[in-house]
Length: 171
Ligand SMILES: CC(C)(COP(=O)(O)OP(=O)(O)OC[C@H]1O[C@@H](n2cnc3c(N)ncnc32)[C@H](O)[C@@H]1OP(=O)(O)O)[C@@H](O)C(=O)NCCC(=O)NCCS
Image 1 (cartoon, rainbow, N blue to C red):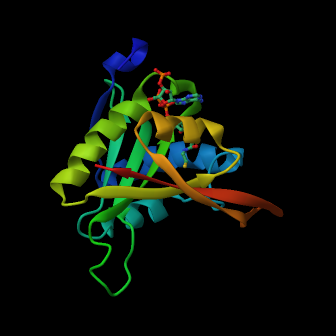
Image 2 (image 1 turned 180 degrees about the vertical axis):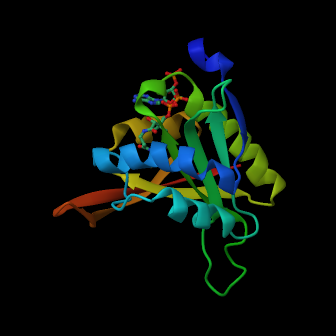
């Protein structure tokens, strides 16, 4: 990691990280510019979410030496349909606190998550992003994702219809 981020480390999250994860996510959701999520999670809700993650799902957090969470990345099975057809496909969400961006936090999270995803038997990651989120598009392209396509007026956020871009990366 570059600069100050060199002091950060990436580790697997547990339910005890709920407060730190919710704090990062809350600011991004309330910022209203980047995420497809529209409803903030309380610490209690985040704790339940982490505790009830399915098998083969995990979260990595990037933490300071004082164990303060500055970013996190979720990896989950892409589909929970009643079929094994998508067992090799994961989906991923990445959230880095504004003051910690462009320091390699997202890249470090992805290095850990890609390795974890391979170890869990996934072969590709498929995810989506707002078409107006160029930060996220650039980040994912830098990780080797390619654009699969886009869906028009797919997300309705704060009364605005937004196109959604679908991307994939083979591990
Ligand atoms: C997208 C996001 C996760 C990137 O995290 P980050 O820690 O800033 O990413 P990194 O510093 O590891 O960047 C890695 C590479 O991605 C690309 N990149 C990341 N952010 C970029 C930006 N804003 N503009 C252009 N390229 C960018 C660059 O190639 C960068 O390498 P470089 O800094 O050596 O040029 C972060 O901006 C974020 O959390 N945004 C808000 C939430 C969000 O949009 N999440 C994704 C939802 S789909």
